[in-house]
Image (tube, rainbow, N blue to C red; front, side, top):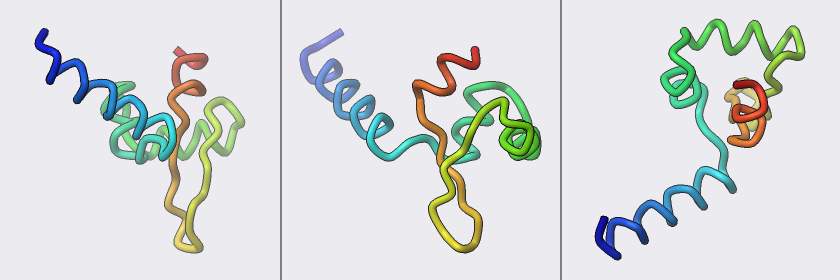
Length: 68
């Protein structure tokens, strides 16, 4: 891995840490349907952060790591 690739990875990890993963990104990472994530949030298994009145959700990487 080059220094540039390492730096890009560091930037991406920091962005995810601060902003969280979208519902689609989290679903792809976990290999589930986004509806499953909504269900797990309602059940308290994998909490989501609601970021808008529309109900958009973000997932913290550390919560996903604990869940796995």
